Image (tube, rainbow, N blue to C red; front, top):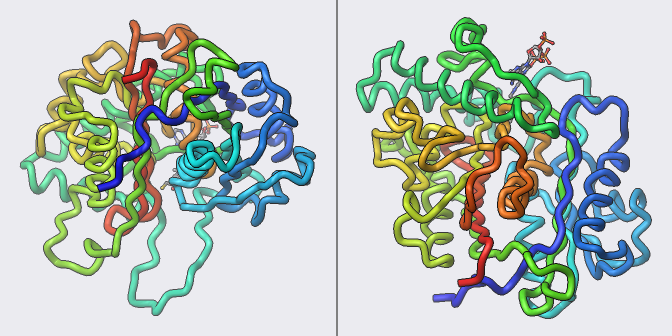
Length: 393
Ligand code: COA
């Protein structure tokens, strides 16, 4: 079994643009916003960065999308695309590069400009298909989770709606405290409960928005981190699981779990040495592309017992002031989901929280944070789990 990467890489600076309908700026303006903040944070010059991993889903094809705009001078730039895990995978590759000794200082950056398309919802590029797989919108794919979860665990329609509404309320209430979020307002419960259906049982308020945004991280080996700052963020685990579409093809699949998330979580907990995730993790940022996705993720990440996730939601376990806050920055619900930028945006909240810079969202001394993404459908996807910490060990 691999020895893993626990505590071998450290983040020394991070930046994040404001997310939203950024018609006021181009992709390079968004990058500049995030990169400038990260460089200042790490007290480092742009030219001191040895190599770049640039994550984008559909806002460019190759490394020169980044170098043309940011004027990096003949340095290696690798473009990464791994659906909604794109940013997380850029971060993973940059960490592996410094750990290997191939470079000393690396930047992982995720950027996406989606709003200029003039398209409602997320435009998913067509891939080769034999036409036996149904062509569904993202809300329709994830809607199955809602009805199936209610059926399996005996929730009435009112209980399911109440649970999903509570998740939407929580995330929007957190986003109201975040100046970088796209939606920065609390949404009254009545408005959430009355919002129109997009794909039954999911309504508008169950969906994440579509946004533009950019986020980035500067990474070094742990032994070098103190050259840049005394309080880096340590990388404990990074695991990606890409599935064989088992769930898509088997009648045994019951649409209440995402196997890829389970596998990625198990591997990440092993790598980080975590045995009791619910008690050891202080904060989690998870892929709430839809409220119901967040509900099933609690259980797949072992933060709730199977079938108990909805009860934990109603008890306030994952609220800002709860035992284990989830999506304390507002999540995809408040930030929208510029695909390539979301994974590193989640890590940015851990960075703020570890440095006591999260303003009104600040928790008292969090030490261990988890971020999670999944890209694809609940029945066939790529999932990523990253664990970061404030301290070594
Ligand atoms: N949450 C809360 N409010 C939202 C919202 C969301 N997800 N999406 C839009 N709104 C609000 C807008 O602010 C706007 O409010 P206003 O009328 O007060 O200005 C209103 O709803 C309509 O906005 P609009 O941009 O016209 O929405 P839309 O109809 O084009 O798109 C969805 C709404 C739900 C279809 C779109 O947000 C969506 O497809 N989300 C899912 C994205 C997705 O699939 N991501 C990938 C996940 S894996």
